[in-house]
Length: 167
Image (tube, rainbow, N blue to C red):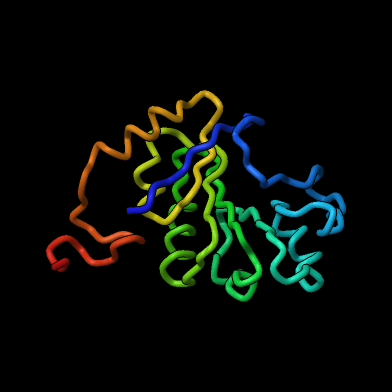
């Protein structure tokens, strides 16, 4: 199973190339001047028709969005950020799984918002590549949680067959 990478929110030392455009309603800078932009859905809709092919761009999805509406845009996107506004709101797990399984998205799926260590295993199993942990969480603790369960009976995004059907 692929390993999820963990980052801490508000930590400028994590060497992450992605950055948000300041001001959700602000103009998007010229793509050549700012690669690896992480845009809101509204910002993306404003620039998607003129976005240069092959230039990395990401989109932050509201957790109540039907990801099927983004299907035509996925070939242009390098990253999709799914949001957990509260750690008890699991709709972003479903978005991640649908992006990986139904829509065959090959780019990075990133979990943002109220992301806790306890969520690490399910994030990984639903197809998330990077989890931006809440600032009070520990990357080391999140990495340890992935070793708690060496195998799973149910299928997931990496191994869709259940354990009994693998062979």
